Image (cartoon, rainbow, N blue to C red; front, top):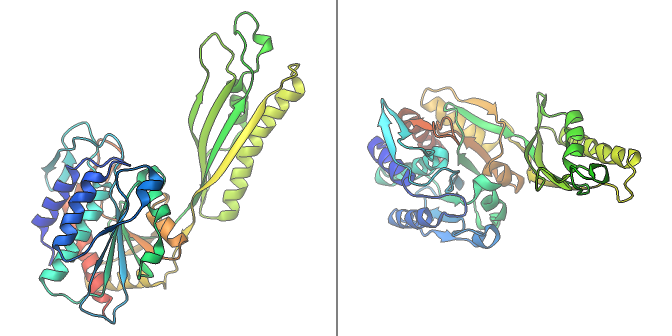
Length: 379
């Protein structure tokens, strides 16, 4: 029931449209025309004002032929990571790759293409379906900003699916919550050769803290990382400031709080120790900023999107494994806002690298599952 060639053509056309985060204007315009062509009336919200981007989120409502069926929202994001300009897809042995030094953009244009193909198939074949809300977000790759700014009161749906992630044949029903942590250590500059004793090296203090800070895999539910370090101005100047940015994430909110507090304590102890032992009256100082990156996602196995997708898989004689994800996505945000949203993987592989690829069969399998899910929603 899925038109494979049309699905491939749609995906390839989408991948060729440059759409780095905050530069989704061209793909948004393209999708508006497609959605209008299949009978929807896409509306762009004001997310561009909060993200500083070219476009807002796109919401389109597709009228169903079964009014009694619950409304379902289908989500994918329009933006891609770098290097994502000038993508030229090639097909080899049933797999789509990028031919150049770029990503492919299957994260998440495969999700967009699958959603569009499923809606076209429903309409062309006059298959039973309830109302469908299509939500294409912006700036997912730079902090889920589009989803965070979206007003969910615009939705009639109470549950749905985000078309994202890797492993076809699974449904992601849980994902961690995460804190973004920014440390700014203020030391004191001095000439590194003439009077190094007059300085306080902010980088050295950061090193002491990092040496004691638990990072990486903390336990089966928790991880932590410092990913950005910026500081210093010249090799002959004792660095007066360094900025470190990182994260802590966990499937348990209590563990997230404990790990975050541990990371902060390590930084505080390094600065306090330097101040106790140092002779510099000005001392060192620490600024800490902790913000929630995304909330916890956890769907009950009896929740509507989980039961419905499993029923659809059984109808197709397939096994659908329920799994726990390790990353944050739009689904985290929407679940946090009261919309029960499971993640339906599309098969994207080696994402965020130039080796990114996706099997055509995986896209078709996902499209068939989503199509059957929407049909089952009427039963």
